[in-house]
Amino acid sequence: TYVLIPQQLLVSDDLEIVGDGMSALALSGQRIDRLFTVTAGASLRLADLTVSIGQSDEGGIIRNAGTLTLERVKVARGLAKRGGGIYN
Image 1: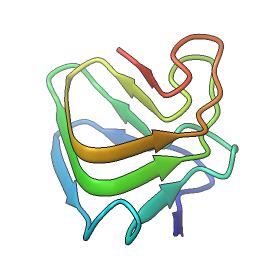
Image 2 (image 1 turned 90 degrees about the vertical axis):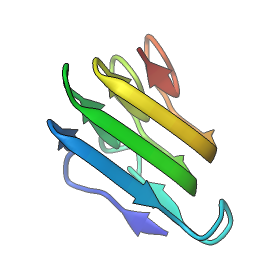
Image 3 (image 1 turned 180 degrees about the vertical axis):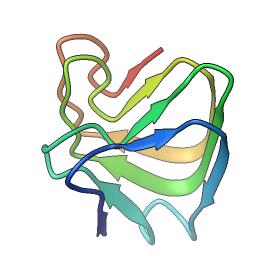
């Protein structure tokens, strides 16, 4: 498990993260913040991994205003007022 702290990763260009499987790679926010914010015009592709334990007002794991592609991704334990896992 890789912990993404102290703040979220701001995706303002194209980004692709590919793991070796949902049980092999996990990215965690440790309830400190959401993991990713994707800005308008940007794209995020996640594949073969788990993203979990994020917290924010909108999108506990991912807040998306761009293009988001998830392939074989487990989204778990996100806490938010709107969009516990993903706010789109």
